[in-house]
Length: 161
Image 1 (tube, rainbow, N blue to C red):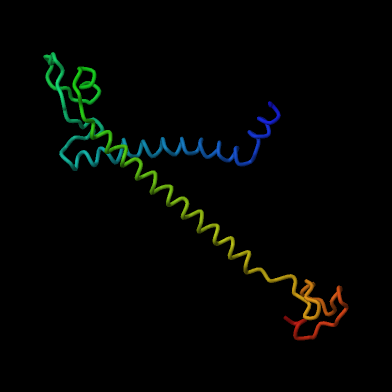
Image 2 (image 1 turned 30 degrees about the horizontal axis):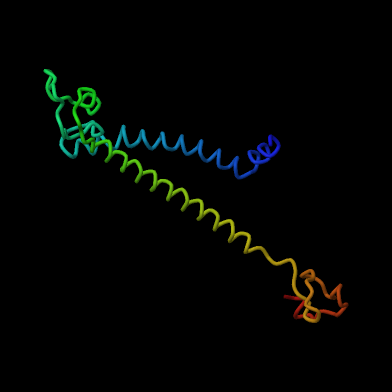
């Protein structure tokens, strides 16, 4: 069983997947920082001056005993005080984060495909090194004047191509 597990874990695609998960986690941290520290404060300012958009919430139900301090300012404080809240700011922040990650991944995949297409074109442009014998249809060297399979002489127009 240990040998099977070792064989399974050492397969190339498993290693590739592990690397992808690690890079994805790091990429996610960068995108979360971009959204939480740059984009959401700008969106919050544009929508009404609240720089901390992730703490935007609506109180759905007040607790039985309302604290003397009044309405809490953050979602965490409201939930701790017993308020039932609709945390729409955190939800919108998650949607924006998802959309930014999706756009970034789309651009990365698009660039990868473009680079892949460029390498394919370079491979296709290479001159052929073989041709078919017009008599026996065997594959022969492009510069051959006689077929090594059927020993026929290749006509000059065929040899020149």
